[in-house]
Picture (cartoon, rainbow, N blue to C red):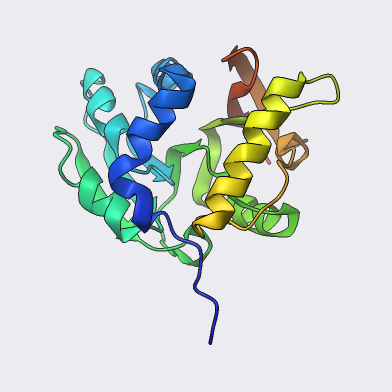
Length: 210
C-alpha cells in the first residue's frame, strides 16, 4: 500500500488553537508586526498561510492588494476562504513548487513554511519562490529558530512537535534547517525580530538588484 502524503488536513480545524495553546500569541505577533513593510505592495504571495487568519490583519492596509494564497491543505483553504477581507484573494490549492504564473510579486510571506522540509526540499522551494519575487521585493520569513546555544526546553518542544506531527502524518522531517544561507547573497536583511524566548524568528528581507 502506498504511503499517504503528509497533510495538515486532519488538524486544520484545531491548528490555531494548538498553536496558541503552546506559543500564545507569539506566532501571531511574529507575522503581524512585520506587515508595515508591505503596506505599499500591490501584489502579495502568501505561501503556507494555513487557516488564513492573517488576511484579516491585512485589512489594516488600506491600499488594495492582489493576494495569491498558496496552500497545500484543502481544509486550510476552506477555512481561509471564510476570513473577511477587503483585498482580492486568489486561493490556490497546490504545492508551491508546482505553482506557475507569469506575474511577479512585490512581496512574499512565508509563515512557518520551511520547518516542514528537509534541506533538499527547502532549497527547491526557496528557488521557486525567489523566481516569483520581483527585484527589490520584500520577503517576510517567519519560522522557528535554533542555534548551538539554544536552551534544552526549545529543543524539547521542537522534538515533541516533530514526533507529534510525524505520528499523525503531517510532516516527515526530524530536524530544523537554517534557511539563512538561502537568502545570501541575493537578499538584504532589513530587520530581524525574535519572539518566545528567541525560539521564533521573523526576518524581513529585500531582494537585491541583479
